[in-house]
Length: 163
Length: 362
Image (cartoon, rainbow over all chains, first blue to last red; front, side, top):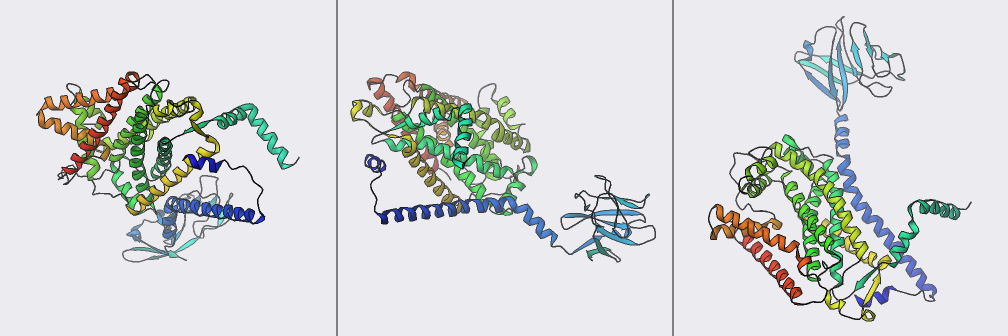
């Protein structure tokens, strides 16, 4: 170890031009190696922390959901379910129509609520109102309508798929 | 204003409030002795680095770990579902073992260099307390996955405080949260592992590091005997720091290699009705005291053996702690030699009982 000490206390000597480029090359190579090393450490940590996000992404790839026994839903009531990872709703209207749409408010992402008495869809966060048949934004801050899904009723339940 | 003058004025602003110039001057004047045993100076730094790795990987595990009844399921998820979760968990477990190992190396190097002598007694005591807390970290962390091995290790480990006369059962029940190891145990061990122990460890570590800055590195007696002109040293900034960081990098590489090539396993979920698995044994750093108690139990059967064993281990530990006050003079006299023999005896006893322990695993 003693010898190394003398090596390290280098007094800057007059350098040859070639020596300077070698040193610069060495520093660049060391810097690149350092960046690779840091990336090799950061990559698994990023993937680890992003795991649930990836799972949710896989879930949104879902195009069809089968709601078992949803055909028994009474008139004028709603069934909340998950389409992929996001909340959605199936409404059985008084007139017998089946309507399904996303339940995520287009304003700031709160979950909206079907109100049978007022026959409207209401968002409690900022008072947004949507049409319960078409999903159109009727009043309040929502900028866009709620996306409709296709709902097909059969003997065992309701099949909801992307329209 | 040029960027240089902005930088200067920002520096001046901070300097006026925090005294950076004094710190820089202190760092510039700090030196590290250079001699044939300088290698051992790195082990405190390596321990510190591995502790930082523990904090970092620990926080990452905390992101998905759920204590209580779901403990095993959440560790299973970390290990098999989350991307690279197995690697993070493996790094945490390996780093824990390497940290205890490097603290033990650090302790013995301090012991044999007699670095505990005046004025460094508090450095020795705080270091021993840090090692003590580190083993409790290890013991409490071992339970958290709640697999078969961790369940039985905790069950057996808590029999040791339980064998203390009169108050033992009450202590063990308090630690366990009931008469049996259960989800209550893992919940309180979790609180201990991530809140109580760090709250004790961090200030103590700060104190320990402050003492090192205050007194500097100790030199072994052989070096102390030399006249000042013959002693060599190197500046801390940047020479020793550079070597220190190189050691950290080497440690990180070894850790990465161990954690990825030998991933830490996860056993079956614990089952309070299942018999203990074959070949179950304590972690290597608990093997020696465990084996000592077992050997003494063979010589003195029954409760007497247990109490005698605990007394013996206890007395040896107290003597070990008090060594700075026994071997206090800087001249290496008879007491210095005795301390040296005591250290050799300790190394011998630790190694042989550990070996016997592993030898007799069936």
